[in-house]
Length: 267
Image 1 (spheres, rainbow, N blue to C red):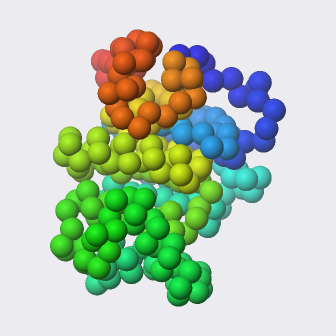
Image 2 (image 1 turned 120 degrees about the vertical axis):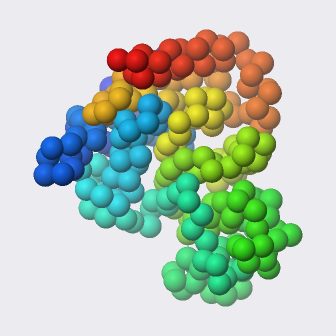
């Protein structure tokens, strides 16, 4: 694993988080303090750290769902002051409309954007195929499992074609088998859709599998403890998790991340 060095990059970052602090309760509680990092085009970055370290707060600020108390977040050269179409958010909670079928849920955002019916139906079916849900296109959320509902949410977000995909513990409510199936599916989607991704997760193995880079936060108030590139992956994304486990460097990366987590929990 190598330290990420933003100073050596020549391209403008897609996301630029500049000395961001977020306070609550009239300044009596600080969730994150003086956080700065950049994310490059096409990079999958995982935010990892102990519970309550503020990683979801950082993600929500990037999404424009809440403002920083101090500092600034810039996405594609524009300061963030609210949600925008270039950013799509996938939450842990299932967000499908219960009165719409899976297909209609995926079409919904495109309908708001006035995409012609034939075009939006074609795109929705393509995305349901990508998330392996096309056989359930005409089923309602109440007829779907938790994993299937989350596939609908992922397809619906992708349907609006955001340039940046923000994911907040999207598989946290799923059982172990469904979780790794979803993780492998996301690798395929990252390859097919070529999005810039920021992912929040508590799961160290998930972070190593999905991400090109991991930003590890200290416990509250959250600050960046380490910012590392998973160089042992050599830029590759593995369709099967067992292929990653075979790579030289995987065990060392996992051990280091668990050690950092233990340091923060015990301090």
